[in-house]
Image (cartoon, rainbow, N blue to C red):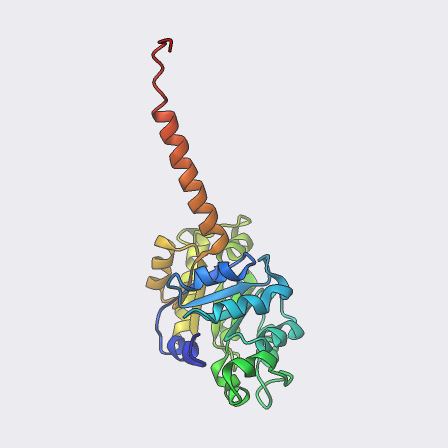
Length: 267
């Protein structure tokens, strides 16, 4: 299990960390991803198939690995945020934060008084991280606002000025959809390229953490070059699908290229 507060310290120090994305339910799936070298794993409760009922089991599985657990909540809904924090995550990613008012509401839901309005009841979090957890939570927990619309890009400076916000996390698919009408994870071209570069620069200038979703490879390296330090490099769903398609594609192509010899001889 990752050290309490260790993830926050590493990211705030500017270390580049690679995040795995969990769409699929199942503790073994989480263990496989957590033992594959990722620094963090994000449980996706917005578009993933895990759901609230599978969250704790997934976090327990991640806890057997070196990876630190994050959660993307379904929406800006304080009860959802407080519940995943009480379950023992080390940070939250909240989608569709378009305004500074929404960013402030996000921080308020995640921080204990007097900083915020998080209700006290760290059920599993205190079990996992010890009795000192409540006193450390405000400093140890990471809070990320997703920037994934034109409006959020336009309001970026005001969002970044939100006290208590650790950084922003870019969703390239929704961002490109908002900017061009077409969703794509490729942020190397067009207006999306400009937005992604500007978001990283403005975030780093304030000493905050810039995160982004990629499927790994060249896009992950490009994100690091732009200054992103929390870089998602693949999801379990896409990695499994891609590997399966590659195996079967290779087999089908080989079969077509080398058909069985037919001599016409009778046996």
